Image (cartoon, rainbow, N blue to C red; front, side):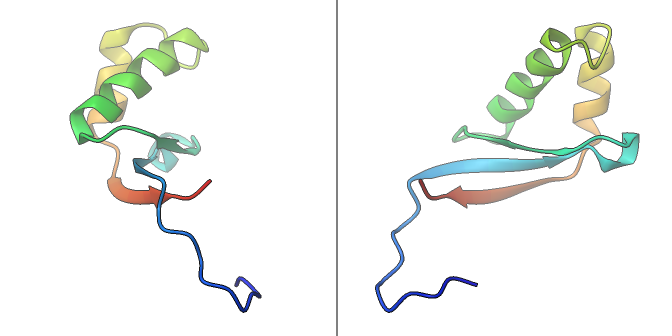
Length: 74
């Protein structure tokens, strides 16, 4: 809840919430316009941080993850 008498700002960016709870992972918020772009960026990120061994494994994980469009305010 936001306690303010002023108007809240409009969303600054479009993003995607990708939930990796099925593999005991976190929810990632990925700032991209298109869903496929968000999934591709998350695949690369998971490999880069060493959470998944390679891009093929990461693609399987991300392909099955629930994804929801969200707005980001900053």
